[in-house]
Image (cartoon, rainbow, N blue to C red; front, side):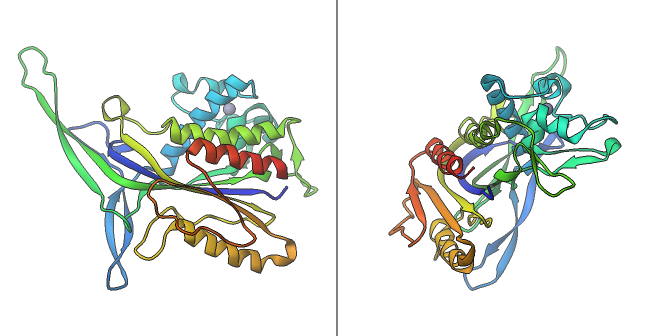
Length: 322
Ligand SMILES: [Zn+2]
């Protein structure tokens, strides 16, 4: 127990419209966020950049969970199986008689991604958490470009022009997994209660679904004509026990990168939590050739070549701890 996983991915994405706002109209705007870009001379400059919301990513993750759970015969509720016809994941949000234990026990989506039922006064914090997908403005520039389109006219009408903003950037996405909370509910006595004899399978599936999310590109909208040109160029994962540790965001700056930064922080962290025998495993994938001389005494470091390897090795380490 007391196992925590964190990950950060570097995604090279060109011409994407994965998270549009104001979708109806002559101009579909891309979602944007404000970011701080380091100035060469010190300090920061505020820039507006394209982004994909954590909710959009989480929605793709829930789709991946449904897919895997169905294939593996894991508990999943009717509402989640039918999310497409129901227009999303309702998670029993309006049921007055909903019970926490039942919702978690009967469905891996509710278990792993949390819910809130105000009428029944119950809620669950999501054991798996996602950041916004934001550009790495330290290492590259970003672009949001309006692309001109025309709707096919009805007979006797003129073509209807409209524009869609497409984004291009190296995006960074963060994921955190509180392994101890999966398949478990809190109790009044303080000792968490397991709701499923097959908890390990739930944990494995929750981590596998991240591979499906990233490699299978299960997130994002508007893909019929804006399927992004997409490549995973780097990633890092850390498994920590018993105190939780987060990897550094997968950014590359002028003087440092996310791999060396994560390792340097992990070393200090081990020192700080020596008396509780803190343990950190670090896995990384580097297609940009930034990792040089990667070593850190006391930390198990594994280099991988693909996201699938990163996920399967993470599962191996986690399984040994739970
Ligand atoms: Zn469900």
